[in-house]
Image (cartoon, rainbow over all chains, first blue to last red; front, side, top):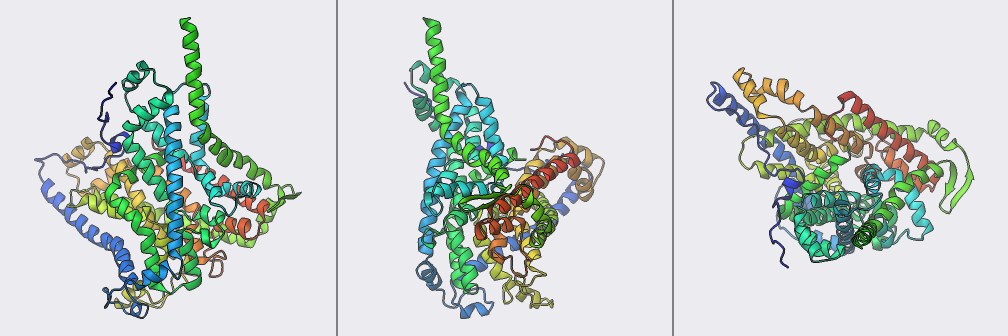
Length: 306
Length: 298
């Protein structure tokens, strides 16, 4: 039994209602005065663009430059370091324990992402395709989950973790993060767009539901899986709130906690702090450069939160 | 025989469905839905790390009324929201309009503007602390153009909160830009064609046509922005520490909640803070819905 190789619709942006190419309104041609006014708009846009772009690029460039400097050098405002060195990185990673924080962040983000993708795709498939009593009610609960702020949950969830003796453990953080409603929602929406006839073949083949999910649906859901993977990883990697609350042992800290701690203790060791910041930002930046359209999928999903 | 098989197939399908959603539903019920009720319950108690100490009825809520630091935190959060939301919306709209033009490298700029939204908030805050420190780049630039250059932006109680506001308006403007872009795209071309035939210039077209037609977008962006602003924590925590330094000027509602729960282990009281905040967020959302009218956004 062979299933079609290609995905029914190639682009996740299309399916999650995010277009990759925003197009300005196309003006009709041949109307007098149009060319001139459009040129003015273009010029204004370029001026605005230049000013705004400076605002967005300078901080990051300045950060990288400082991370390659020595502390005395940061007193001046020469953009380029006289003698670029990786000393600040070495010190941040070793003396200030950022190697440990990086490893912790990576491990946590990887474990939670794996679990989230598996559980959200399986659950999303069930909500999209399988019929079972109470499905609609349960799905309303999923949507409700999206609207409950972390702040309201802080005390009760923390209390529950205390009771379960999970405060201070990775497990505690893992349990409350192992699957996110937004991931499940994204997966369900994507599965709904896959034509049903592809599963009919599997049905004739008498494949079980898990096998249909594994063999037919998952291979067709590549873009959604990529989006959920990236969004979850990025979310956990960047998160400060819950790790700060749960992981109280410095050996278990993640990068954002490490940075917060560094700020409060060493404040003005700028090269090391900037090196730590680059370490925290760089992996996400690299992923963003290669897979940026998937990041936008989260934006589409946040539409359900309003 | 056939019906029996159909029945068992139905059952099989339902069982598979339950099995596949079991773990996610357990997580959502246990860590999201149930905690709402649990938070309300806890808020009626004097509650320590080991559990309830004694029932206090509404005392935790009454105490909030007289708690000056809580008032300060609420005031800071409101000031923050009132400043950041319009700034985010204006900047987001400006960015959206810019990258919606037919300009070179539009996609590149759009990506660049969105980048601060997805980068680590802790790292971004550290960068802001550096650039806006008293000997930092911002002061150097201000000094170069003849403005006062000795402000310790995050270190003085009169500028610390506005600095966090500026930082977050900048960080999240890229997200608002994307919302506005989607909204800009939904305006039908014919509208612009009609405006062009009437000889309306770009400025007039924007204010008379584009801006009002973005109403669903405004609503959506405002809701997302207000909710986000009311929950501000990361930046305040990193800038001012648990104490909201200097002088409680960066103490926000969520930071206060964190302090009461984790720092002071006053869970009942912290739960009450969380509930007040939650009710407030819901109320603001509903009011905004009324003000902007029901729209197809959200």
